Image (cartoon, rainbow, N blue to C red; front, side, top):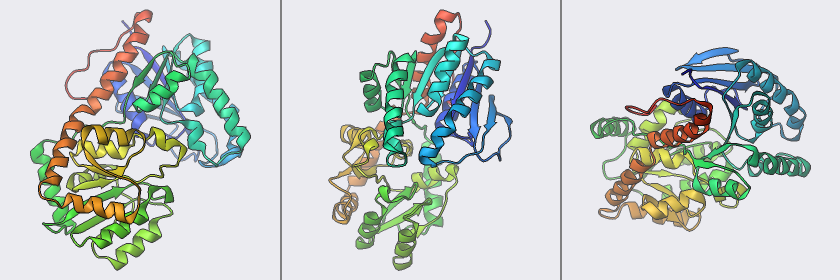
Length: 396
């Protein structure tokens, strides 16, 4: 039996994209021949590359992210390029990542007879926000409603989004979360925790909070800074880039318990998370995508066995409420966040939350996500006389 051929379409340069790489690696471990055809807008990445058994082909069409309405005029060209590249690969499955590649994925699947997988990373029309004209947003929603029922399988990041697309007419759906495995054994995690806390000068009796993200205004960083400054036992490390950086730098200059560490290597995010006592996740609850929110930050925290501090919205709010793996605030105000930090100082409370986070982390693992994806693929491949190898050992 020959290996199943999978062509993934991606609207960025795969430099990398963690969700796409995790899915591709899970399929490669199952014996699939996976090629990621992606869009290198800056033209500064290799046109062809091999990464852990994944073939990468980049289409060079000059553009940039965040162009708004003007980007729409380029889309027919990139869709045609996806189809042209994909036809040469003769896929058994076309896996379109996000709505911006789905029109090309649908056309390529029709031309080759391949099964079509739509991987919805988010509610794409809601993500566009005010960056595009109302006409473009209207067209995007109509396109989504037309194409979603055409997919043989729709995979997405959480249960709320899965239900959203099922109501839209998706024929088969599966949750494949952006879940994580622990970075090591309990002993290794304890060693990392101690080393990072010592190097960061964390006080033994303090509550150490970590927030590493895109530091935009919607992330509600400023109320956290004020709350930490009010609690003498609290220490905070903030990493990332964005419009809120000046506020973070000013807070760090005035409060020695707040530290700004700039951009953080993805490998080091797990180390900081492991060293923390709680992970903060701030997001504007009025954002259209907030109702679906199942953020990577939650699963990073659970993989490290650390509780989260967040508000009651989206899927993250439901998971925290159901599992008890964190503290839900009524709103992102300094008063509410101060109360959450002080709750962590109550005798035994932090240990209770960490235990709940570890239990939840055992449920939301990378292996569980890989198995969900591979099982769904198995149902697509069986009528074609193809199959994936059983998943053995640890997941990618």
